[in-house]
Length: 224
Image 1 (spheres, one colour):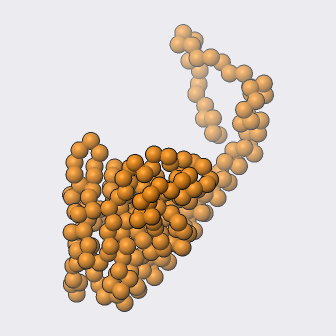
Image 2 (cartoon, rainbow, N blue to C red; image 1 turned 90 degrees about the vertical axis):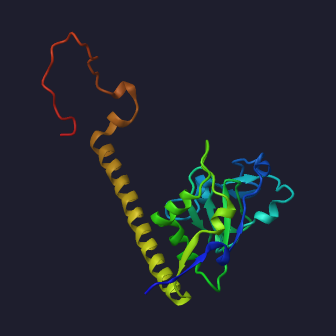
Image 3 (cartoon, rainbow, N blue to C red; image 1 turned 60 degrees about the vertical axis):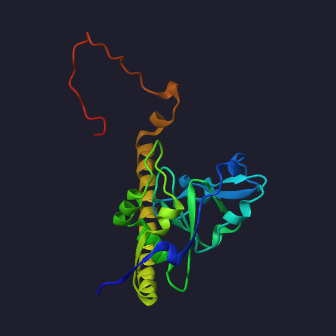
């Protein structure tokens, strides 16, 4: 069964990036308006909240670039194609000049489906084919609006969205397990080697300096 293909601009409100001048005072301060930048977007299409920088005083005009739950943020400058789906944590966030906001029409397209669609390798290739080549790759809002989106029925999209969410949860679980195993691995080395990993030079065994003129000795496996 073939599905209809609809330009992205017919399914979403696509807002171009704000001026970079608005972010001249961007800081790591804990006070101010959070700004989503390309560096904050993870491979899981989420926002890394702990890295968000802020605008201490929101300049005039920044209100137009506010984000809300269900919005997508797409990187348009540099790492073109990275995309994140905003959840309820978005609050009073705004997006950076290196990004574009995509606000789906919820009566026509499911945001979870759309985020996964835009992140698909073949779709990213289509996006890159519209990039203006220069010192830094740039994707414009105009070219993004013409991107064709394969659009199943809303019921099918919602079914796919539920499956995608479940896969995402399983991926998150596996990543957490890998993180714990990495901690166990580090702990084993610390337990086995003890003071030799403490950083205390006085407690380290003396080692011979390498000298090209010295006779070669039998090599051993340090991990055994």
